[in-house]
Image (cartoon, rainbow, N blue to C red; front, side, top):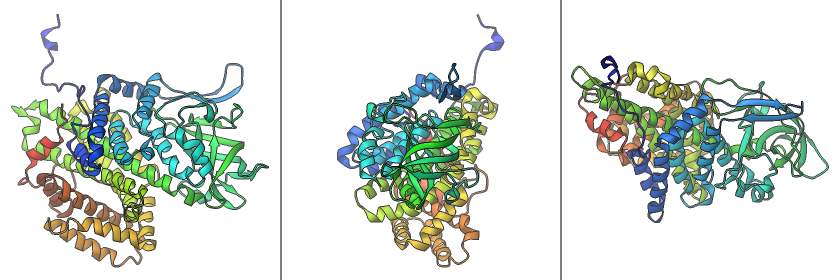
Length: 547
């Protein structure tokens, strides 16, 4: 019998055994809004099944195990042969297999596929974000490979397969395959045109031998990789298979794994190419254009990933405060904590609503809608800039809602905190996104037209949004010397777009709070500074994770 001093009281129960999808009102509403009526019933059932898996104790334990037991590099076997393999904990493979079977690499093969996948990716990030990296890159490789119809015909069925096959063997023998990427080098970083890896043409047309060092190679145990290298005609995109058609290993020398702040379950490596066989993707000298759609897809996944992390952090905070009592009342019922939770909740909902709207635009663009494609050109880098930057402060504040409990590893909040800056840094950090928005404004008039059309759909519904749109138009009227204020401009673009979407789609109390604090200036620099006259109790209740 436990001693009386060890009786546990006033602790929140674990947030397990619930449906992560149906318990997220903003996410379910977005899916219902953006999917065609004939697709909804099946999609909602499918996503609810994944949501129950995400909320199960077993899946959450897999996430903890994968993160606690990071991958280990094995360069040689016991006899001294070079093998260049990375060993993962079994939980990693269970998660990855579940993610593949759930269709998180299959968006390109079904109607409404990007919305459906976006919702799944949003949820799966909340289980273990590191596992989402190979899923994201495999998904994003498809549009890049379509630059070469023969390559697409060979690889796309395997990349969009819902079968996870972890064995290293020729792709032609596999029912499913994963892709990684190796773009950046230590001297260039985001400036991929500064790459020095060389590509020497071989006798067979379209094949090359690569020599060089890649500073970041994601998911090094994948079946194939997209790589940038300097061919005789300039910077070119290549496909590097891990195993050659005859079953021999390609030259793929893993030098070390990165020791990262977060994302611990996922392997990020430095690799050497030394006569490595590769096949050209697209034309020589057209490496950057060949990967444009791939980059857009991975950037959208950064938005989705950050939105998912925010949602998990807010769900944990609201759940905890709904049970924890202090000074005679539940924390969630106390005015100041309610303000904090509501402020976090509107940030989370704004991120989710924007991310799913962009996924819907990707579906429409794939069906030939040029206006939606133009919207993505501007809105994806703007959203990537802003939503990923908001992730870290949201997660840290949510952890604080749990007090000392939130600083303890067992709560799961420290893992979210370590993960929270990642999406802002990867796939082009903040300045890269801001400059990309400026390029779109300067070179692609249709992109701005599509953006203004989108936000204009909410005009007249909220005076603070209307004022923000007018102010943004003033800023856009003069783009001379805009680089120095690019971050400010991109922030406003993202906030106005979020505000317009919430005014159109969110409950009035959510839209009112967002417009007051984010557009009307009636909020402070820290969370928990919303005007007390708002309906904050309803905002918090909407964010509560359901059963």
